[in-house]
Length: 402
Ligand code: AMP
Image 1 (cartoon, rainbow, N blue to C red):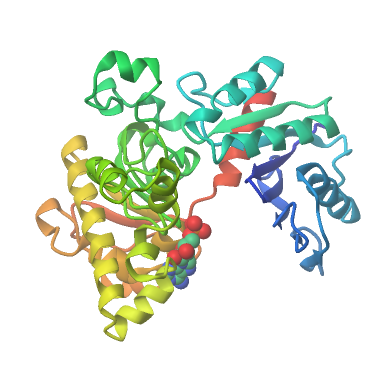
Image 2: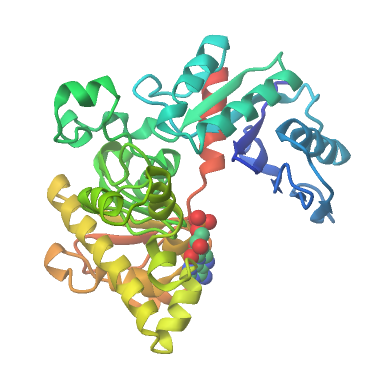
């Protein structure tokens, strides 16, 4: 029997998301989430997906740290006959947010790699420490199988220098590793490829603008399967309007808040990352709520929605210019997959760019990749559900079996 299962771990500062997949057939065997790690109100939700009668199980009991969380997950998996001690487990695939310029490919983790991921913490202080913890815990439980790091930044490493550079003093930029790295890379990789498949073409044959619109949001320009630009930069703060992040702004806003508003760097960081975007503009970061309020004529919700859509349109226009020829614009993630009004508004008025939407197709709800543009449109508009866990599992499995 060849080991063909991959456990995918996505460790956040107080959460652990996981999926167990069988790469022999791509089947998802189980998935779940541990939330509020380190608090009294920790919660584990486990959903076995294989076998008849499998039902979601939930437990609420304090879980002290990530080690305890992974032990609890292992116990749930074992109860379904999917224990982590199984010889069928081929690898553990870890989502790692920041790979810097060092990691541009999925990488088997050894002590040296782990030390380098740790060294990248200053570039991703909110994310990489949790990723490191997840790796350490999983390694201690299964030191005998490969642990693979799949980096959020990796897909964007192909950006040409002129897209990756900020126009600041080069020596300062290099000294502090300041450049545009981009994030959501596994999603942009997966969706750009799935969009090519939807068009019946090979990735190398198509140019795609991918709009990953979740609570975090980013756009990418993908030419022939290769990323040539993306909207997030040094950190996931740049670019589109997001649930709680501002996206693009004049950097002088920061100086102004410090000098005139008397705010500290940490306060401004908190403002721009956690209290801005849709939430900051109207008090809600959930697009469903914003659409409902906007429908009732709530002025703040209308302005938030319009600002969100305006920024999206600017990126569609910019990436059309970057790519020269666009075959498809693909919407993905929570908002992109579910919010038909956002798709409609983002494409409205862009007929000169070859973009149009079919209202009937756009209103259909489905979990399948699909086209929502009319046949006559020069550029296909697609809705392509993302699957970052499958992509991480695929990349991890390909690495350990090659
Ligand atoms: P994600 O980060 O990809 O899980 O996306 C989460 C976001 O998707 C939520 O904050 C909502 O704003 C949005 N979302 C999910 N479902 C819907 C829906 N049916 N309509 C509009 N927005 C949605």
